[in-house]
Image (cartoon, rainbow, N blue to C red; front, top):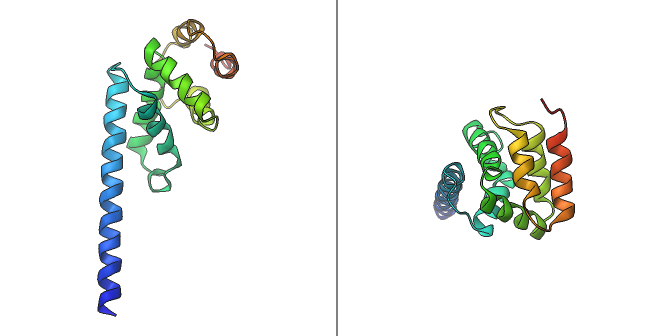
Length: 140
């Protein structure tokens, strides 16, 4: 019985540490996005995968920062291209990006600039079309 309790405690501790390390990684990616540092497809993929982590669903700070990071990716042409490549590699990620564009946490961004940056990316016609439709919804 004591062995089972010990194993459960160790497993929980290990799981908690993995979650903390993962969260630190996500926040470092968010920081890079907000500062227009070059992100890899892998980093953007990790950012988008974080939407699937059920442990973080109610994390308000993460939700706000992640939303802002997605918007910031549109402000940097290199990162925007990496975002589109990431979406093309895994089509379920488009839903997370569209959600942030259609219902952003902050309205402090220029959709016209986002549309302009998106139009300068070559290729990826289907993905860009979906994003453009979302950006053009309810334009101010």
